[in-house]
Length: 184
Image 1: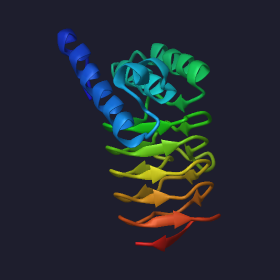
Image 2 (image 1 turned 30 degrees about the horizontal axis):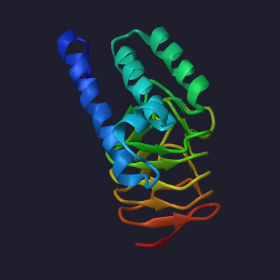
Image 3 (image 1 turned 45 degrees about the horizontal axis):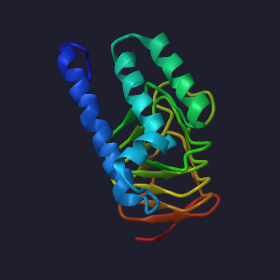
């Protein structure tokens, strides 16, 4: 992701490349996806990520009010709340999307999948880093809550409705309330 606005011509190219990778992720990992044109027109996850990428760029360049307004517009139209300050890597798939919340200090690696009703949230009134970090290839099932400044390793699967409050190691599967590792 372009970090600072210093070459206006390249900003559009960079955002276009990232959105292309996000759309490729939908086409590759969502069996209901039919084609790129349809995805671009109808997939609320792609819409939310597109607006997030614009808002994030503005946020990083100290246009924070505009970034937050764009974030709220995206939330209104998609039902997906992504704080413009969080960091999202390439190839995120938000499937169905309604009710997804991604907090301010959350970090999401590349090629992750998040289903509807997922919260990447904080716990309590903590200052500083208070949201989870997802490494590459994480899959989070519908309704799961991943809370606090915790690390979710590479290629982790989190089951539907799980409540994750502790770090999960690479290549593990976590389920339950509170979540526990059942498989590596």
